[in-house]
Amino acid sequence: MKTIIADTYDLYVHNSKNTVFPKKYRSYKIIWNMREALLELWAGKITVLAIPELGTPGYDFEGFIEDMASIGQIENKPKIEYYKFEIVRKNST
Image (cartoon, rainbow, N blue to C red):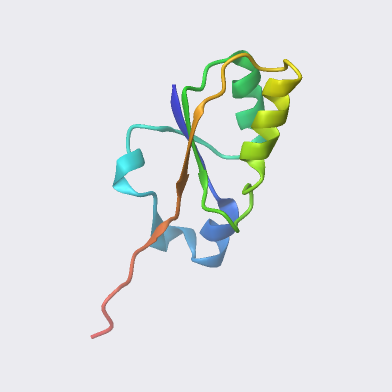
């Protein structure tokens, strides 16, 4: 399954009605928190995981996945991609 972790911090800062996920991730399942993502990883369901760009909450999740794989908590590591929300700018006329 292809999933994307929502960056709730960016949603809050930029007002969620003005933010959209990049179109590339339209078919991905949205996961709203890291805990839910962790449960899906343990279940072995995730093949591709899109996480917030480096420097935003969740930036160290890839290292955490590496650690889980090295100690045998997960068997298959997902492919990791980074994304940044697109901010919708309204014309002020």
